[in-house]
Image (cartoon, rainbow, N blue to C red):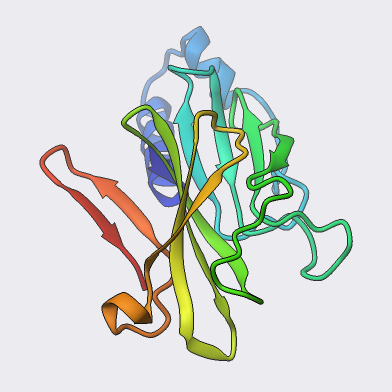
Length: 184
């Protein structure tokens, strides 16, 4: 599982090492001989989280805060996209479907972090009210599928249980020896 920043670093390193060689393989050609344009996802796609799920499903998945202008009738919050090559992406679903988390009334959700943990797809996300940081927290949801719908399990960190205002932007990491959840 990679966050987009890790994926970019790895991609740059692979590209640099491949450019030092005079020979290319067919595998290299599939990533380096294609033309593509930024953005690869044509919609607003802030706070992306990428899941490399090729072993289980054959796809990469991208999750983001939204795919349009906030408040617009066609804006999807926590959209899920998938791709076989990190270039051509297709919109799959709204991560929560019609069942949006309701544990923080009036809140918005953003900054998803997707992981595959113990046979489940685990989606961490921020939820809160912009003008009241003591009510901004992070929640968690699970699904049997990377395309959802995700079942919300509620708040995991917030002012109520940590004393930290603005407990947002969760990021899960498994080092192999321990599991950590970082948040802002």
